[in-house]
Image (cartoon, rainbow, N blue to C red; front, side, top):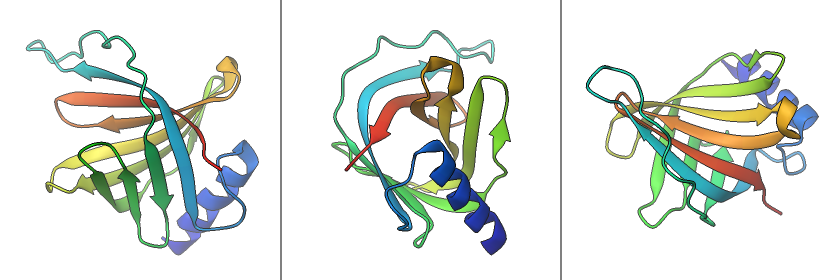
Length: 137
């Protein structure tokens, strides 16, 4: 697991998501959209993008991700998953438990064909939250 964490950190260096050589990565959200699973088991359309300015921390020392929204969202990283790469995306996924004990997957995604735009996805069984994110200095 430690090797996976180190690999994850090196990959962040190469795609510009890091802030120096620290173990804490800081982001700022610029937009939020939500999709909800419908009765047929498929996700519905994304909601209209809402402009939001929220801080997000990825702390690999404490194995957690924190979204500092009005109601703070704390995600304990249960497992660091393997990075996935396609022609269009680089995905850094995590299995997590939120502060209510609910299982979810949290992923940082870089959209290669969209100017390396970065997004944060928080996927639950019945809903997905998508934040557009930028590095925070």
